[in-house]
Length: 351
Ligand SMILES: C[S@@+](CC[C@H](N)C(=O)[O-])C[C@H]1O[C@@H](n2cnc3c(N)ncnc32)[C@H](O)[C@@H]1O
Image (cartoon, rainbow, N blue to C red):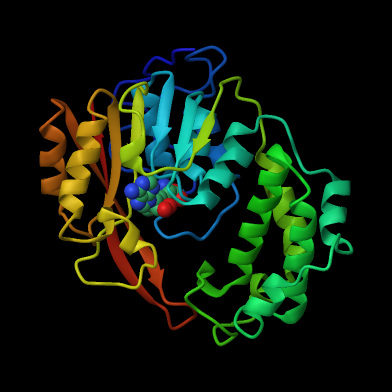
């Protein structure tokens, strides 16, 4: 199905959702295009997507991205750097045939579970089996991560859960792995594994809940967002530069941000988008690769290069380039003493 652009850019009501969107108005609601959801429904459905604390994830930009995608229309969309999967899920909710891609494996598994999968859920029996006695005596996780992450009981649960998940297949297995990833990230301070031990434990329920209990809750969260969009979707796991150049009406580019100073981002050595010396050439190459599609690119004001440079790169291949700025404040740190910083997120829309 070809989805036509839903709206013009002004004089319409504001976008609903977790964060009010500034600037131009929203698109007409359901009924504007029979069979396709309107913007409020798209934003509210995507708001249910399980929240994985992942570097650069775009949960807070959903209303803005939803508006951009529904304005652009088209049938096929690529999310080239899918991460937590929330934007791929948004594109599915908008009615696109989605290809979700990320060079890491776990984002492809999350996208397979929540975007490609249109019907399968984990049954109460599946969850009980994974949370029950182990299917074999494996202990790799317990032996390797004892005293570093989690409690001994959590590590035993992970080995035991894997003894069952290894015997599953297809979308069920992808759902189980996604729920396990989400459980581990929620149980871990700041959702990152550069922190060890319990020194950041501030008593939050998520940091106290045993992984086994997390798993049952997180599996239910993924189960709740499974729906049939009627559009075939795909999940791939490759370098962005190995993806086909054509075949998408809309391409969303959300590469890692290159910081002005070195940071401890653990994947940076594997990607030219993370270094200030290589990021501009990498962005130019990606933009040229997908020059035949409408492009939506998000980038942060705390990163290199600046917005004017990115706009210039887009203008090398596109005539119509719009820049929307979204201000937000984010917590920097782990507890009450956390500092708050303001940043500006740019959304570039190039047709
Ligand atoms: C800013 S995050 C994307 C966040 C995602 N939009 C979300 O909302 O969760 C950037 C992602 O790009 C992936 N990545 C980095 N370099 C890549 C490359 N060369 N090819 C494909 N994926 C890459 C990383 O693994 C990471 O998941």
